[in-house]
Length: 358
Ligand SMILES: Nc1ncnc2c1ncn2[C@@H]1O[C@H](COP(=O)(O)OP(=O)(O)O)[C@@H](O)[C@H]1O
Ligand SMILES: [Mg+2]
Image (cartoon, rainbow, N blue to C red; front, side, top):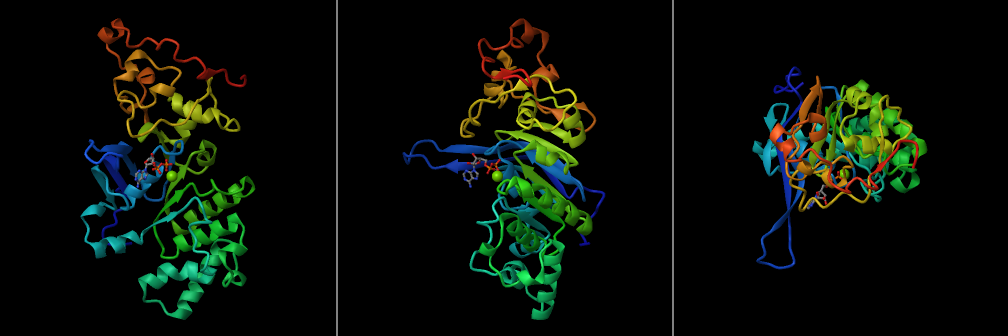
């Protein structure tokens, strides 16, 4: 335990974090546009928990995780890791604390250098840090291989000799080689064959309990996070739509977007699943996101007022918040008289289906 570790405080504390990326336009002197990758996200993650980030591809999950570990500087807001503002650290201090946070990537094919053998891949972080004898390094690599279900016979083989699942095991061994206490698993099974999903997920859970790790678990698939996460957020176009304990979100999903994601995973049994929400088209561009609720264009329940009024995340029960005008009934009587709570004409067509039927 390092000196700045107080386990009664969250390991991650993000306050009103936004990340914009500048986009280069075709014409030099035109006003610069920006990608609003993450907008005004606040969250805390406690030591030892698994925190899920869910949403379609491009909604800002990886950017948010990269901001947590100091790899992307937020445009606004604060990020504290163990109460330390990562962006105020000197380079050397940052490098030291960065060893406590590691990442497992979606694609074990491109994240492992094909010219390295397993020994080189797993020992590289220790080699860079220095101070370990060859003998200790080898013993540690063998220990890590056993921990992830590989053996010392694999030491001098190359990534191309392994299946996708085995490569992900190598990636996991490499990520935990420096004894981190915070691990971001960014879509760790998305690129793998469905038949090995459960094995890799079980391995991650096993390693978490053995090493007492805190996880951020990113997935576009709600079925994957259901059994591993304690708390979670559902993101859409850079914003949080629903947040809370995984138990309450799966028991009582409220946001139409969460319903839509759940409609896509029919094998997850939800008690009060209502109509089937079919999402048409891709997530819109985050360059010019809707100014009201970010989801209204694809929401079958969108009301006239959703176009302009941003949806705030409000508590609906302990540890469960939703950003939806329909759920939170936010319109004043005057706004209702002006028709802001009326459905947008002809909007829902094609967006709503009945669950089970087409
Ligand atoms: N370095 C970058 N420069 C410009 N745009 C980026 C950069 N990284 C991500 N984006 C954009 O930010 C948005 C969110 O991306 P990302 O966080 O990777 O989403 P996800 O992980 O949910 O798929 C996307 O529109 C993506 O194109
Ligand atoms: Mg991503």
